[in-house]
Length: 110
Image (cartoon, rainbow, N blue to C red; front, side, top):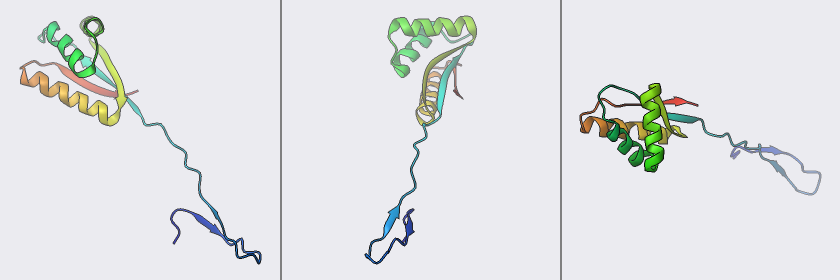
């Protein structure tokens, strides 16, 4: 009968029962960074296409991310909930393999 609620017998002769419910504190979900890793084989134009297609970046932003990956070895494409980040990593990796590129995409907790 207790659906997560505590029942107190507040019956002081009036037939009234007081129900108190625990306060629910909404916790923000953990966020994850989706990162592209540099390699010496994947064409820059392919990386730009991936960033535009899977991360909805415009050409200028996609080019900036690609150059960051190229010069620094890693670049952030976006920050997402676990499920979204995991899906994007899988999509990018599948797309790269389908096109025979060794591009690596990973996620890390922010």
